[in-house]
Length: 267
Image (tube, rainbow, N blue to C red; front, side, top):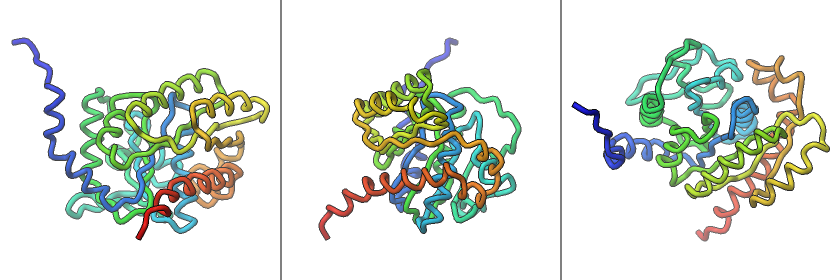
């Protein structure tokens, strides 16, 4: 008997979709950290952003959805962190950050999964994770425009915003532009773009001009920091790096943009 594709409409009958929206009901903002290709420092930016924002007093969650290469737990030094079962999974707090990752279940083992299986596992984690009342939930997305990225945009479209990450490389910029165009078509706002691993300030002038043509005004540059690798796994050391200081400045601008509509709301 020939295999019959499941109609796309069936996906919308999944009861987990309604549960996911309930799970983030008390989350003020959901911001995905995304990149056009891997190896640009997306995970480091997501994790350091969570630490920086938690340090300034915000209630922050961090969700690692990069199933093929989860690494936020390594940056945080949270290899032994485990969720608590209570009407779902309550994420552990790591250095003040509520944290959830597929790595909590599989460790550092390779888990071969096809695209449809990854999407299903991602939906399951979104549905069973019980976040508290957060100011901000940061999501470390897989690179590119994979099914997982598109599914997150669909499931969280009522709250989702993004921050894009690239390096000065022409290949990386081409990839992030493609991603930006896809997100724009999906009506997912972009709060800013980070140019990471900058060795020479002169190399980014053309990149900044290009990005601003897209309509992205909040552009930050993070220097290449040889000491960053030595700080991996130690939140205290990470927060004292030059990269962390630049990320703080970047988020000052992002939060201004995010809070502006709320300040204009009467009552």
